[in-house]
Length: 216
Image 1 (cartoon, helix red, strand yellow):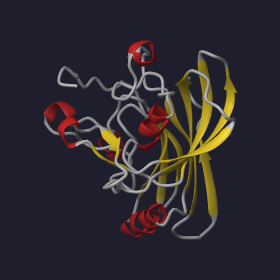
Image 2 (image 1 turned 90 degrees about the vertical axis):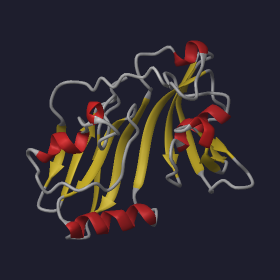
Image 3 (image 1 turned 90 degrees about the horizontal axis):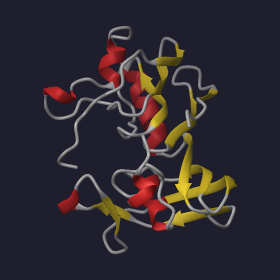
């Protein structure tokens, strides 16, 4: 990854919902959620949103290469309330991915503990002794011998969880620069998209759902 050059996509950000407490947007692939190290990585999703929403506050992140639905708080109360929902696994997150090869059976769960692979950061790895518990459910949408389109539902929210878990099944996410290799890695982007979020509104307590179709 040492030859990586950050080249974020141009253009505006699609706002899916905004009210007095929360902001929901569709993050494009290739854009950092928050600033990285160095001036060359200052352009990011939250910085772009701050112009129109100056009180925007981070609640969770999506990887640089992942696109899809993200929620932000617009008040400290909303940030705390949403943060607790994520910590206590009350937020339902559903992703769409394209995987190498045919994933079988049609539904299943990966239950493998994860830990940072320190010599190879930001990579994560399975570690049964020291890793933190991590579970991912999958549901196949369609498949052939070359590729599987799948919905992924993370039970836990570990860093790179979906990417490592799918690679461990032998069916890495297509276009993954860290966990795929050969033809599976040769795609214009990581084929992983946060399709939907379901959460409780910090003010009203109403259960709300937000979604964005996968762009691949």
